[in-house]
Image 1 (cartoon, helix red, strand yellow):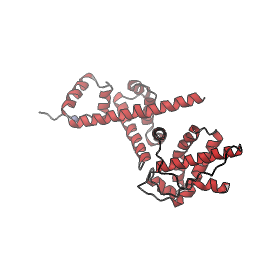
Image 2 (tube, protein in one colour):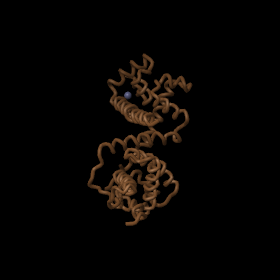
Image 3 (tube, each protein chain N blue to C red):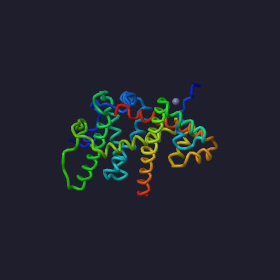
Image 4 (cartoon, each protein chain N blue to C red):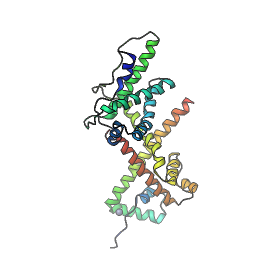
Length: 205
Length: 71
Ligand SMILES: [Zn+2]
């Protein structure tokens, strides 16, 4: 198998249950704003995975590009299947690309030679371990946090930010010049939006 | 008997954090005893607080710690 074929092996040709069906459907149809959103949302997850597997910053950037490239190009053949989980599929695509990067590195060092990993058919039998589940949850919390800024009024966002800095309600209300009862209304609005984003991200997982 | 007004999400959250004025807090306590609807809403508020404190706050703190360790 040539290097190009190895690199191309990440096409998302299987049908897997997805993240948010509407986003995936739009990505599969080549809708550019959805591809931008997909890139923005999933890039941090790929980076975390790469860092945890010991890749260098340059290798992590290569990993992001390879995963996105294979997903976008393969997305044309992607069919939504409610019986399968996108999360598991996506993790395996990432892991397979990590293996390819590590394998190439080892080959350069002439210490290792093996067949490249093929992520056209990621192995469904192997369960994802607890570490990955935890990592995924952390990723969801943080991505939802990053998304909320543009979706709530400025004061509501400030309330949310200060809450996350462990400031007590009275201090936050004073700092922002609002009544304590107003603080609780803003907190409710922020939590509602936060949960809405979380459920959008989790839909189908 | 006069119909009692239910408490709002924000009021119940303030109640949980000890931020209701004394009289309102006492009324809220009494009301909660006999109102399944407000009890349900209180549970909902508690769940949201857990999501915020045990979920998001912990996750962001861990992320910060990880980043601080790297720099
Ligand atoms: Zn009630």
